[in-house]
Image 1 (cartoon, one colour):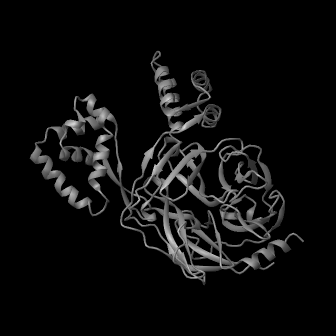
Image 2: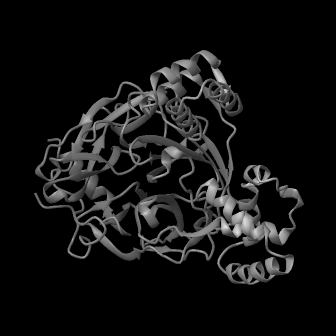
Image 3: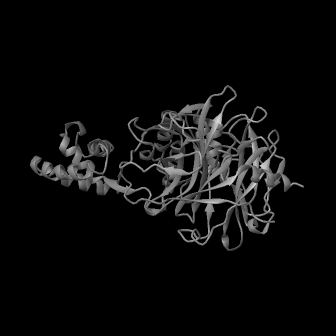
Length: 489
């Protein structure tokens, strides 16, 4: 059977090494104290003569660099007190200079900019008929192959031509708030998944109530650490704190452009990257709109699926997902409840597609196998390419598949609206395969997407090219749905 015609757009989005952020850098307490000691030997005049040109130079690269350097100096308050230095007694120029020695520039997208997800912008005012504002998230990769979530705004017109708005000159680091309340059972279950020692979790189980907050947990851990010295136990307790750091809220300044807002790895359990955010516009039964994204947190060894929530793309609440179904990668939330329950796609075994239902958006049990590799171009594995899209004919799922030579292709599936465990149809041939211009990159022979939309009767698919850059493709929606329905015959 002939493949469905698909139109590749000429728009390409590439990584930009000029997009840098000033991040806190700490090379251990011993070295940190040595650096501070040297700064404290400088006269006020020497301090001013060093920091003044630095501020002039880096103010052109960062919004409010003085605020950043003050914040980084303030993070050293405990270490300074241990050196008999009162942070509050330091004059502003010395604080800024100390902060500068614990700051480094990090290029967010110097290596790659790929695996996009696309949704409607909450702001759709003052547009012409057929136009739509879009927010596109990307997996941005910088030094050390550390992944972050970056954004761009785009405009699509009545002809489905896409214009990606140029990024701003600055990147903003969000304020981080850790004020979560934890459910003990879910928290300790996640500790088991994170391979934290069972005896440590049992000990904390005895100390904690059914619901507890971050300060209560820190107090319980401190009390345990005050027992006889046990380095192995203390490492496991540190892991528990890392796990608690997986819950947080981040707030961006209201004067930032969407392209200025980058979500970096924050907790230890995501220190090696946050990967492949799948955004969806979720509509509750009462019509309330919330934007959710599932993503993968990775610490270099353990994978933890997480859920991000926002209503305005300034404030984000983030926490882990729980349950037997919240394993591995490729979780994708349906954009509304089905028969009164949340629904989620997953790939818990790394090979097959699953579906699951839940009364709670962060707890997922009893995954049901939905699809397994069937055609030669998907024998290695299959998975989803973002949240399902509701059509009159069923739930449209864009899939990815891995075949010979580890070539990634995109496919499509249609599921029943009321019972998504029922597959209506599935493409026998790939929808999109890497062409000669797309097969070279950081990971060759890969096309991959994390979420599509429908506009003006076409399916708009943003996709990553060989894990390096991104582009867009469109396909006629009626042709695609017709082919999917006929494939069931």
